[in-house]
Image 1 (cartoon, one colour):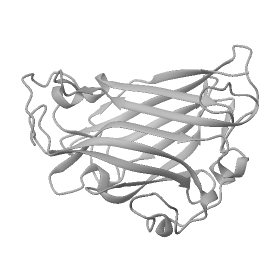
Image 2: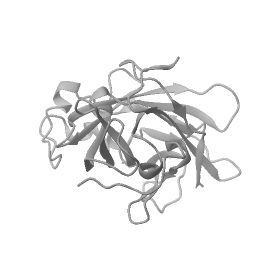
Image 3: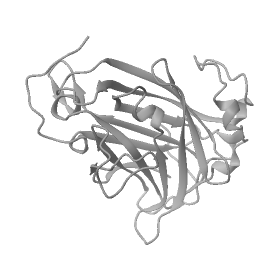
Length: 267
């Protein structure tokens, strides 16, 4: 059912994004991280309150996320190569309900999560959407040593693979690695003139991933006992192709977010 708000478009998606990240020990999300394998949590949202008709859905024309970057504290090594590999074609052959892993070794799955969003027509009025969608997410090692693959499935988008590349962050700032998620065309526009507008994303990779070897590994807890995660994203408005910076499918970056940060204790 379409829902139309009373407010006009006055802000972009970057004004409503929220990020909560976490690094934790083998005991779970509430335990303090120590040297060795640590768990990783990314919890992102574009705040939307349907009841109060507020948030990105109501104050911005339809937009898509093109790139999402997670920055990891420089004391954490990010090592997807520690995991067993599973070929992309086998990942895409998973049970669509994602209740079982029937094509890949269980140890190849690194974590799981849930994404949510709205399917909207190009040019839809603020607050108007075709459907709200939940997407199951599973994380795997990608090809090569420095890539992750996210298997994302919903009845609307069907199966899609999101590639994420790990690269070094130069300089002496708090972050040592960047994980760049490249959103595929099938998630950006699942049907002609339809936009998938992300509203929330949560991914959990436990410290026990990769057989306990640690996809994320803390070398040393600093004297501050604080570890940082950061987040930023690049957005596209209304499937625009007009702009100096574009993705592989030709969609232009029309706005970019500031860096958001989240702090975890360690030691």
